[in-house]
Length: 150
Image (tube, rainbow, N blue to C red; front, top):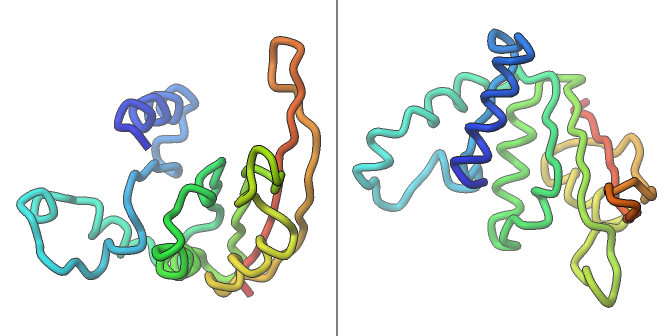
């Protein structure tokens, strides 16, 4: 996510009065623990200790149009870390592009979601495609999935 998107989200968190219990992070989970070479930016990055401290404590992760953009080679490691963040009974709510051979050939199906959730050690609770109002009189298809940590 662009830094400006994270700032907008942080502003909304503050405006909603959720600052004590809701936090936003912009981090590549696939490689946050082990980096081949530590750059100066990595040394100054306060995200790693924050993410490490969250392991096993998170109730809910919301991923809106995110998982489909994770590079395939980083997906298993990313999902593993995501699963480690959730506490037992913690939930991942995920929305993304549904598979469409013309516009989104790599989009989501129920089977793809279940496979990806398994990478995180999560059990699929529900998934499917629904039509949503996109504004301006337009409607669009969205894949929704919910998975939980046993």
